[in-house]
Image 1: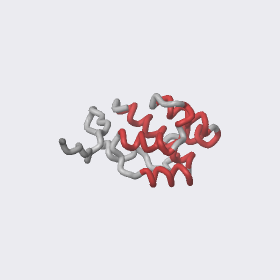
Image 2: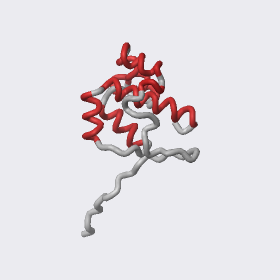
Image 3: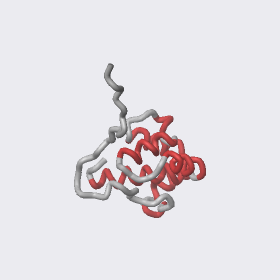
Image 4: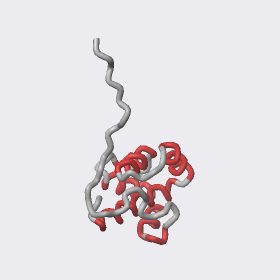
Length: 114
């Protein structure tokens, strides 16, 4: 009988494109002044911004503000962090979390890597 195969590395999503740092967020968590439109949308219509983020990532509208969406986005672009940090950020500062993802999407779209 053959020995079972043990998976030690998980497959990852890799994006090809211009030489841009993929291992960092394009803006900080509290960089609201970077894109005031996104910040205002997140502040006054948080569910709408969550739906925009989910739509940009081809996911269900209800998932846009979740820990899973932040983790998916972060791992897709090899941004350092953990599920624990995603959970804490989403729990304690949900508006900042969704705004950061949307700003990052917008910046990567401008660079042609989203």
